[in-house]
Length: 130
Image (cartoon, rainbow, N blue to C red; front, side, top):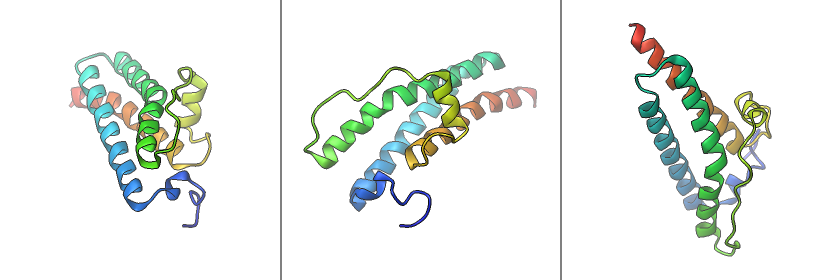
Protein backbone atom coordinates (compact mmCIF):
# COMPACT_ATOMS: atom_id res chain seq x y z
CA UNK A 1 0.00 0.00 0.00
CA UNK A 2 1.56 3.28 -1.04
CA UNK A 3 0.72 6.84 -0.30
CA UNK A 4 0.06 8.93 2.77
CA UNK A 5 -0.94 6.07 5.06
CA UNK A 6 1.49 3.36 3.94
CA UNK A 7 3.13 3.12 7.40
CA UNK A 8 -0.15 3.17 9.33
CA UNK A 9 -0.55 0.39 11.91
CA UNK A 10 -3.95 -0.40 10.38
CA UNK A 11 -2.12 -2.17 7.57
CA UNK A 12 -0.26 -4.45 9.99
CA UNK A 13 -3.59 -6.12 10.89
CA UNK A 14 -5.02 -9.12 9.08
CA UNK A 15 -7.93 -8.52 6.74
CA UNK A 16 -10.38 -9.66 9.42
CA UNK A 17 -8.62 -7.42 11.93
CA UNK A 18 -8.97 -4.47 9.55
CA UNK A 19 -12.65 -5.21 8.93
CA UNK A 20 -13.27 -5.47 12.68
CA UNK A 21 -11.50 -2.18 13.30
CA UNK A 22 -13.56 -0.44 10.61
CA UNK A 23 -16.79 -1.87 12.06
CA UNK A 24 -15.79 -0.81 15.59
CA UNK A 25 -14.85 2.67 14.38
CA UNK A 26 -18.11 3.06 12.45
CA UNK A 27 -20.14 1.90 15.46
CA UNK A 28 -18.37 4.33 17.80
CA UNK A 29 -18.82 7.19 15.33
CA UNK A 30 -22.54 6.44 14.93
CA UNK A 31 -23.02 6.26 18.70
CA UNK A 32 -21.21 9.57 19.22
CA UNK A 33 -23.01 11.32 16.36
CA UNK A 34 -26.44 10.08 17.42
CA UNK A 35 -25.85 10.90 21.10
CA UNK A 36 -24.61 14.37 20.24
CA UNK A 37 -27.62 14.95 17.99
CA UNK A 38 -29.98 13.92 20.81
CA UNK A 39 -28.20 15.99 23.48
CA UNK A 40 -27.98 19.08 21.27
CA UNK A 41 -31.54 18.93 20.00
CA UNK A 42 -33.70 22.01 20.70
CA UNK A 43 -30.87 24.03 22.26
CA UNK A 44 -29.33 27.35 21.35
CA UNK A 45 -26.48 27.38 18.83
CA UNK A 46 -23.78 28.12 21.42
CA UNK A 47 -25.03 25.24 23.59
CA UNK A 48 -25.03 22.87 20.63
CA UNK A 49 -21.49 23.88 19.75
CA UNK A 50 -20.34 23.33 23.34
CA UNK A 51 -22.04 19.91 23.41
CA UNK A 52 -20.38 18.99 20.10
CA UNK A 53 -16.93 20.06 21.28
CA UNK A 54 -17.32 18.27 24.62
CA UNK A 55 -18.45 15.13 22.77
CA UNK A 56 -15.39 15.41 20.53
CA UNK A 57 -13.10 15.79 23.55
CA UNK A 58 -14.73 12.80 25.25
CA UNK A 59 -14.31 10.69 22.13
CA UNK A 60 -10.65 11.63 21.87
CA UNK A 61 -10.08 10.93 25.56
CA UNK A 62 -12.09 7.72 26.13
CA UNK A 63 -11.93 5.70 22.93
CA UNK A 64 -8.22 4.83 23.03
CA UNK A 65 -9.11 2.39 25.81
CA UNK A 66 -11.87 0.84 23.71
CA UNK A 67 -9.50 0.47 20.78
CA UNK A 68 -6.85 -1.01 23.06
CA UNK A 69 -9.32 -3.68 24.20
CA UNK A 70 -9.99 -4.43 20.54
CA UNK A 71 -6.26 -4.78 19.81
CA UNK A 72 -5.94 -6.93 22.93
CA UNK A 73 -8.47 -9.32 21.42
CA UNK A 74 -6.89 -9.26 17.96
CA UNK A 75 -3.23 -9.43 18.94
CA UNK A 76 -3.67 -11.31 22.21
CA UNK A 77 -0.27 -10.97 23.84
CA UNK A 78 -0.60 -7.33 24.84
CA UNK A 79 -0.53 -6.54 28.56
CA UNK A 80 -3.80 -5.56 30.20
CA UNK A 81 -3.36 -1.87 30.96
CA UNK A 82 -4.99 1.54 30.98
CA UNK A 83 -3.92 3.54 27.94
CA UNK A 84 -6.09 6.63 28.46
CA UNK A 85 -4.11 9.76 29.18
CA UNK A 86 -5.20 13.11 30.55
CA UNK A 87 -8.17 14.67 28.73
CA UNK A 88 -7.18 16.50 25.56
CA UNK A 89 -6.48 20.21 25.73
CA UNK A 90 -8.15 22.70 23.39
CA UNK A 91 -4.82 22.83 21.51
CA UNK A 92 -4.88 19.04 21.06
CA UNK A 93 -8.41 19.22 19.66
CA UNK A 94 -7.53 22.12 17.38
CA UNK A 95 -4.57 20.14 15.96
CA UNK A 96 -6.97 17.28 15.18
CA UNK A 97 -9.57 19.59 13.61
CA UNK A 98 -6.95 21.29 11.43
CA UNK A 99 -5.28 17.98 10.54
CA UNK A 100 -1.98 19.19 11.98
CA UNK A 101 -1.49 16.12 14.11
CA UNK A 102 0.48 13.13 12.80
CA UNK A 103 -0.62 11.91 9.37
CA UNK A 104 -2.30 8.62 10.08
CA UNK A 105 -5.78 7.19 9.72
CA UNK A 106 -6.56 7.53 13.42
CA UNK A 107 -5.78 11.24 13.69
CA UNK A 108 -7.39 12.14 10.38
CA UNK A 109 -10.51 10.09 11.18
CA UNK A 110 -10.84 11.80 14.55
CA UNK A 111 -10.52 15.18 12.85
CA UNK A 112 -13.29 14.25 10.43
CA UNK A 113 -15.49 13.08 13.31
CA UNK A 114 -14.85 16.38 15.09
CA UNK A 115 -16.06 18.28 12.03
CA UNK A 116 -19.10 16.00 11.75
CA UNK A 117 -19.97 16.72 15.39
CA UNK A 118 -19.66 20.46 14.76
CA UNK A 119 -21.82 20.07 11.64
CA UNK A 120 -24.54 18.55 13.81
CA UNK A 121 -24.71 21.76 15.81
CA UNK A 122 -24.82 23.87 12.66
CA UNK A 123 -27.33 21.65 10.86
CA UNK A 124 -29.77 21.90 13.73
CA UNK A 125 -29.48 25.67 13.47
CA UNK A 126 -30.13 25.53 9.74
CA UNK A 127 -33.07 23.19 10.27
CA UNK A 128 -34.68 25.63 12.71
CA UNK A 129 -34.51 28.52 10.28
CA UNK A 130 -36.15 26.62 7.39
